[in-house]
Structures are given as structure tokens and as C-alpha cells.
Image 1 (cartoon, rainbow, N blue to C red):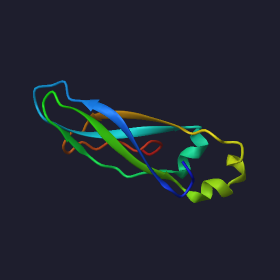
Image 2 (image 1 turned 90 degrees about the vertical axis):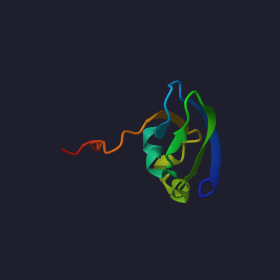
Image 3 (image 1 turned 45 degrees about the vertical axis):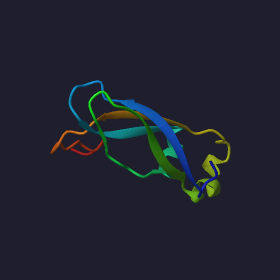
Image 4 (image 1 turned 30 degrees about the vertical axis):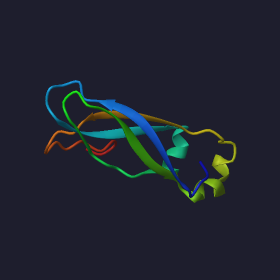
Amino acid sequence: VVPGETALAFYKAKNPTDKPIIGISTYNVVPFEAGQYFNKIQVKQRLNPQEEVDMPVFFYIDPEFAEDPKMAKVDLITLSYTFFEAKEGQKLPLPGYP
């Protein structure tokens, strides 16, 4: 992926239950220092009972990544995903904040 250009990848998600669910995903970027330059467009996805789909991940690396001297030796960024059911009205705490 060239910094500043958008990219599209896919991952497989399956709803093994007998009810429809609304899912959402979270991600991790390694090395962690590169995470500040990673930008993903967040999309919730409905999965019908027993449905399996290839889900898109639309993202880009901020062009400032290429200008940061601390990133000069970073030539590989690994993206990992966790897909889970979104609970209506559930508020998740922000890390580092009470």
C-alpha cells in the first residue's frame, strides 16, 4: 500500500447462529507506532442466520507516514481484525480514560 492511496482487502465473516446479527470490527496494527497513520472507514454489517460473507476493509495509510523519520525503517505493517456482534446501546470505554 502506498501512503496516501486507498486500499481494499477482504476477510471472511460467518454468523453461526439462527438469528440475524449486526456486526462490527476492530483492528490492530503492528508495529504499534504505525497505528497513528492507519485510517479505516468503519462500517457495520448485517449477517443473516448461518450466512458467510467476504467483508471489505477499505483503508489508507496517511501520507505523513512517509515523512516521519521514526517510520523510515518500517517497510511492513500488519493489520489484524476481530469481528463481533454490536450490542444495541452498549457503550465501550475508551482506553486510558475513566
